[in-house]
Length: 98
Image 1 (cartoon, rainbow, N blue to C red):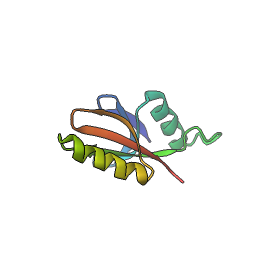
Image 2 (image 1 turned 90 degrees about the vertical axis):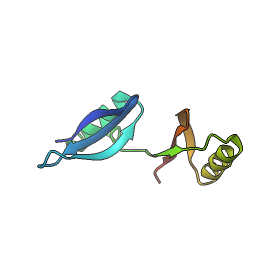
Image 3 (image 1 turned 180 degrees about the vertical axis):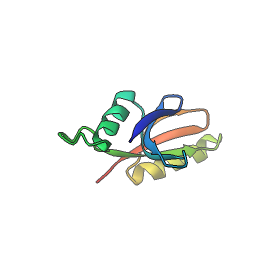
């Protein structure tokens, strides 16, 4: 059975526990309700597409050097990644799944 957990502050991860009680992640969500929809879909509620994952996420640790960080963000943007949030040196990007 799929469930969701708050894997980090403000980040909800859908997944399941295998028979050895290891966590196996499926997808990450910044909105708890989106994680709940994904879990419902994974558990068989396929009556609509609300649970289908639309984005993949990337966590990037950026250098404190602003010029280097801006260069990395620009490169990611050229590859289709959009920055969704960031604090300190950790930034999250999302990219639509084709």
